[in-house]
Length: 182
Image (cartoon, rainbow, N blue to C red; front, side):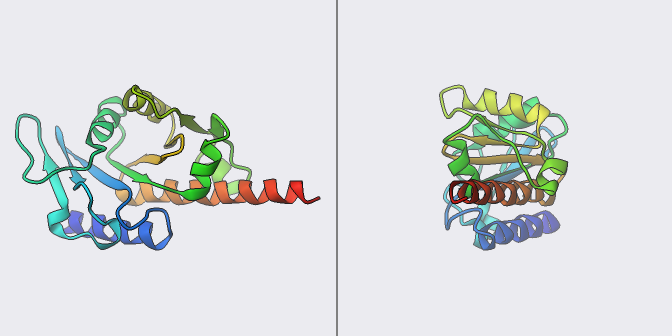
């Protein structure tokens, strides 16, 4: 698990350094057979240690408290067979846009190329299933007022989709400001 631990640590540092998570915000996981490895509840993604990773297997009790989003991660893996990793972040511009629309439509070339339309799903009692269903079709989805969930072949790829989303959301934010001032 050493190289996997390194990947968690490096991706966590990048998320934190880019301002995509706060000190104790966000979480990540990687599929491991029928189970997964997920960051622990309250871990600091920018400063992860080996003890912050929790192995969750069917029929066994985890050695530490997994992220409170564990059920969301499990629903995503159950719904999207191509998901090998999930990154949950709090990209500020994307969250702001999620509060005023049902989707985010990137206007920049990279966002259009990699993401297309990014659905915004409501934060309600059905969020796990709604989110998982949306991630069957899309690489990244935003839960309204909460944050993004990206699936990928690796944590690195999920980080890429998260970064592209936030850059696209910031461009949209700037476009709206320019349109109001011209």
